[in-house]
Amino acid sequence: MSAIDGLAQDSSSFSLRRFSLVPMAIVFVVLVCLSILVVQLGMIWRARNVELDQAGQASSNLAHAVAQHAYDTIKEADTLLVGLVERIEIDGVSEIELNRIHTLLVTRVTELPQLHGIFVYDKNGNWLVNSQKVLLKNLNNSDREYFEHHRTHSDRGPYIGPPVRSKSTGEWIITVSRRINLPDGNFGGVALATINMRYFRSFYDLFSIGDRGAIFIANERGILLLRRPFDASKLGRDISKLPLFHDYLPKSDSGTAVIKSGQDGVVRINSYRRIEEYPLVVSAALSQDEILENWFTDACIQVSAGGVLVLLIGFLGYRMVMQIDLRSKIAGKLEEKSNELEISHDILAHLVMQDGLTGLANRRYFDEALIEEFNRAQRGESTLGLLMIDVDFFKQYNDIYGHVAGDECLKKIAHTLTMAMRRAGDVAARYGGEEFVVLLPGTDLAGVIAVAESIRLAVEALGIPHSGNPLDVVTVSIGVEAFSPIHLQNEAVELVESADKALYKAKESGRNKVCHLEQSETVFILVN
Image 1 (cartoon, rainbow, N blue to C red):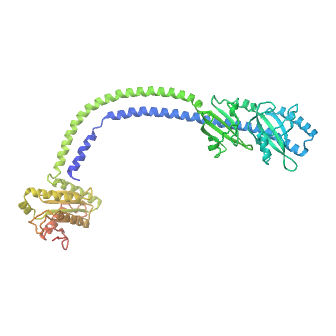
Image 2 (image 1 turned 30 degrees about the vertical axis):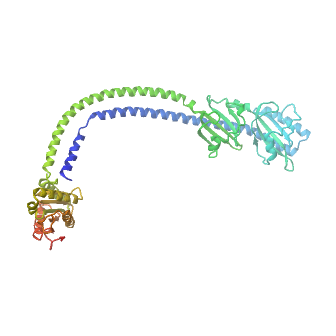
Image 3 (image 1 turned 180 degrees about the vertical axis):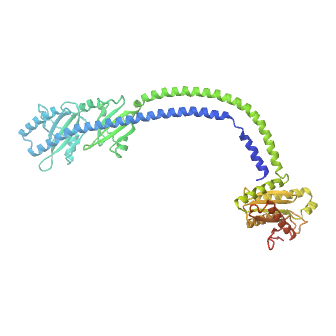
């Protein structure tokens, strides 16, 4: 690195020395305000997540309760049907048996409040017996969906059909039915239990789900059986394409998800559960907006209070920054004057260490660098190499081409030396007149000779015309030396003296050569 480069870095560092407290104060105030806002927003957001988590737990518990209630309700009705089917298949449907069954059914419906009625139909859909106190005759239910299902399906499991209006009372009911087989295994009729929808509705009305909450039961095919809020027009609707059935149930039999309702567009926290043993799905959902209403009110209050606090801190911080800025400007002017003097001093110091013609380090800089690197080599037990370079026939060059051309020649050679420096610790300096030196820390003799030979070839390759040189171009002679200084045995001047003697040897042996004092013969490449 040249002295000018070092000076440029040092001078630029002066612009960094002046440190104002104003930016620091501004950053501090801003960070304090931002920290308050971030902490407050973090707490608000955390409160929101807590509200949603608690709502998710509440909806999950609600779905579990609804599922258990539906299971218990249907299980009681289905258990009754299992016994009824078995009795009919074994004992038959004689007049006496039907009368006994009628008495039993009336009693069971009285005992189970969820039951709307129990009915038995023959293979043609005609009413055989039911739970009504006065038996109705000449009615037929072969057009009902559940009857057609059992007639065309041989499985003996329970079937839960879509909601229908009772033919006997006109009320909305949910049907649970089982197939009755004849002794030969063919279809023999249907045993049906109807559950009054009011029983489910009265149970669901016990839960606090807000104005926009929802509870529903659907069969596994996605047919809506019952929903709160109740809307008769939506009973029996196919909801199998909605996200709950399409996206969530195929992955898990139970869970909680935030879903936008396909029926009314309300975003709800929806907990769903498939009922074991029966092809039913229940869902309990709470409106996300209703859940977050109180949170939103609290958040607005907190944000308002936090905003006032931030504005107050910001105002006080602004006044503090203005005071700091005023003092900083006064101190800055004083520091600026001091820096100008310091920069001027450093510039002069660098100029003293730099050769004005070539831009290389001067003799003074080299002497200081030599002592420093020599001591470092002693401590680290490493080698130190030196090149002494002299321009061949330079006096004749000045006599032939003039001193201006001589100066340009030295500049070109100095640039060649600069390009040959591969490491930050290498030093190239003008030693005096047409002599140059190159200091190579940590380089052994072979390395020093290699660098010297590359410089010699590079100078020759410049092709600077010189009619006073036998080769007709400017060349240099180089003396080299390298050794590991030993404490209390070697001095820095020995390195210079050895390299200088080697230079003399190179000039005596014909110039344009690289020589080492202890070589048996000189190392050189001569270009004709």
